Amino acid sequence: MAILTFFLVILLAGVHLSVKYYSKLMEQPRKPILSFAGGASIAYVIVHLLPEFQKVQEEFNKLIHIPKHYEDYSLYLVATVGFIVFYSINHFVKASEQNSPHLSVFIYHIGAFVLYNSFIGYYLIKGLKQEPKTVVIFTAVFTLHLMINDVGLRLDHKKRYDPWGSLILAVSVVGGWLLGFFITLPTFIFALWFSWLAGGILLNTIKEELPKERKSKLLPFILGVVASSLLFILI
Image (cartoon, rainbow, N blue to C red):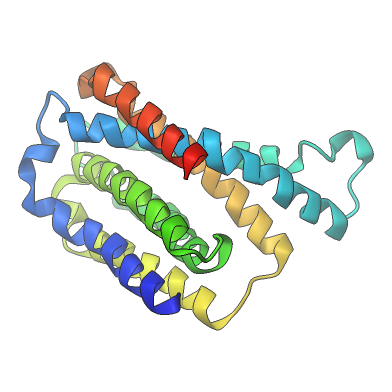
């Protein structure tokens, strides 16, 4: 399985290096494929990732002492932090969008996505059930999701994003996979990282679909949600 996941993580990394060659993805109104991808990402969080919370939460609660009243909420609070972190960075990006966002904002934005992408690479080899159909479905969904993220980053940071931003994010996906290939993170760290990522996925998908200027497509979005939900449930 390591060989298969290696080729799949290279595919994921390639998303960040190839989107620039499809300039029409950056045009408005929003291309249907991006709205479909947004729907698939939302379905992944709700149908697959959130149910995983319960399992991870149980393992997490065994490791640290949490007052019983808060046992069911701790990782959801971490996910909320992930949501807030990405929302805050996006706020600062939008606040300075009349000009190119300040270099420090760009660095924070890329830094957050390095953690984000690294976990995707790690999860591919260590977080998923290591079966061909499972890792292939995961890769298909996150190929679409990383495409959304890359388009958003290019629109936000324009020329500053290439070449270093896209290259750093491509390398970070592979770096996460390499981390998982050589070591297994403690459950405590995995649980926190996992939860933080879920909040980030939710925010990044919503922020790309909801703004009026994105002119998103409703039908492709719904199709993405339905198709991905059925895929996760039936396969």
